Length: 367
Image (cartoon, rainbow, N blue to C red; front, side, top):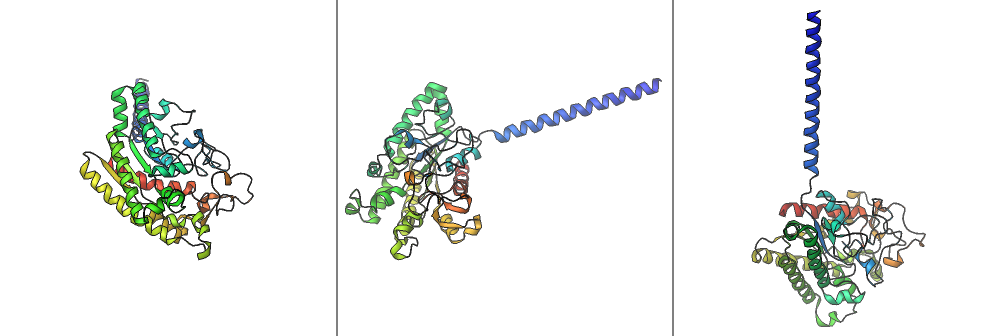
């Protein structure tokens, strides 16, 4: 009997030890998981145009809006739907934020549904239709880049009230910044012949003018505390569906003149950023190339499982965007993942996810 009691006692102890070991192991796994999900940066802060605008134009008096279907039709996350994103789903800042351990949607600063508590982990100041040139914003009455900077200043004041001056300084100086702007300056301003810039500058001179404005902008946000900044170069702007449509006399192909200008501009932006890195102490600037990737996918769509790289999914895909891209059209595609472009100007969510990895990788290199 004593022997049996001893065996039972030892078995009970063994079971207790086993349970304890399992619990310790589970705690270790939970701790590792929490560590893995810990945000890499305190916030993602975004400036630019429709390539990164998540809804600011909803709050201003402009015709350039996208807060109606079918925009946002594939954005099923809480807070999703037709939010003002020029896409069928999420935008690059959303994917970058999620990849860095932050919320999967980055709110627009002018969206009344969000508060400074939400903006503390991510905020978008971008406005669709804007550019580096102030005259570009005036064409469609959108926010000029200087106004985005003013909102950034206001944001810092509100942030200081929310988390204290030291907390605000920590967020601003350690945040990951995304800047994506420049396409509208050429396509909606210079080449559209609406502001007179084409009379003031040659295309090459206008590129220099824009690069100088970019340098002023980057210097301004540096002085306001930004330190880790990615600047997205121009895509192959001559290959956007709208530009192909306007190039009908040449067979509807890419407008190579525009693409050449984009390449030259990108080279000059890179050189400017190198100068700023040398000039401004602690300024971690990274250039993000999207031009080469875009050209490669247009030439080899099978790499991403694409079937159409020349037209948008929405409506006919040739000229429609903003109010022309709406639920009335019977021609909108059923599967946007087969398309490079959502409307005649902007990529699908699938492509936004693809390009966001380049931004994320660039940010990780400068953190």
